[in-house]
Image 1 (cartoon, rainbow, N blue to C red):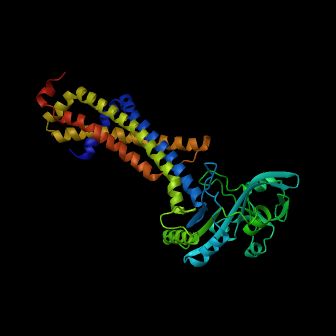
Image 2 (image 1 turned 90 degrees about the horizontal axis):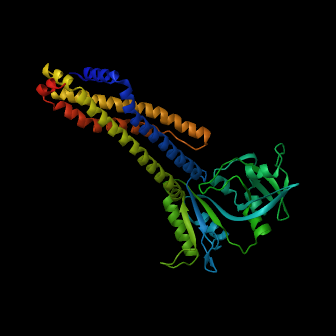
Image 3 (image 1 turned 45 degrees about the vertical axis):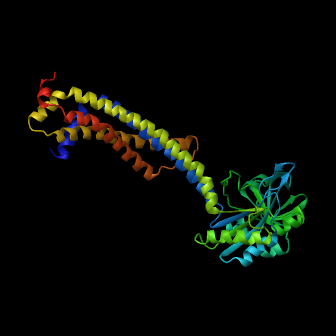
Length: 407
């Protein structure tokens, strides 16, 4: 008996009991639908995190100041003030394959514009900062090296800060804002970037030349919060990271075996750390959905065993007129695989629809991966083969004489 004939007989047998076949496939439909929907949520969350990490720029290394302890309380990275502008200049001048460097200071302050005010983060950076972060302006332009050398009172503001400080129909370019009673001229408004990998709003901030921020707002005694370094390519990123670490240890006179007073992290490390949770969540969601598939497979086995009992006489007749045991086994296997495959296709459609509905109603990021769809379909077919094998084997091993006597 050919595969085509066996498939036609299997479909005919399933069609005779449409309701039972539909209810049997329901377990697979629910299992595959759950798998697709949950994997879409997991992949969407991971893609969102990767997008946020990518917003840092390309081939970026972050050097953060270390932590200090006051009254037995650790104040966290950036509190030690161990990094200096000279450290940033040394990194740029002495390490090959470094294409851009930006020292950074940061404070939080109240900003006033006309009759409006807004509390936001104030960053002091170099012009290279915008190159490293790949951050373009929506209007206006960024400040220049000349502004850094002259400690010019100019500012580039984020989208959120612009919305809070200016009216919707008002152009911020050329306007004056006051930070701690110091006037600054707005020269640019940045394009929106959204949340960072840590969850903070990247658009709610104001960026000044770091020399201006230190001179006018912070004071020279305060060290840098961070140094941004951009490597020439992804291939040299680990080499540059190692050289930055060695150079700063040398400049800070840190002996071998002693702890660093700074922290060096590449974009690869940040991405791995940020996506680890999303990856773990995806795996857990897939395992939960797989339980539903297994339950659906048990349902297929149960119904197929009932079908073997009901069709014992039919099996006996087929064997009596020349059907081989392998033909009977193939027929029942095809029935099981057909049920699970059809259930898988319906489950994929329902799961994809559920994922899109969640994305539209709850505004959750979802991503329907072709790999996940293919995996879910193949898994559903394998479930049919695995749980259909035992009933098929039982059917093929029936004694033709006993089967013909069965009532």
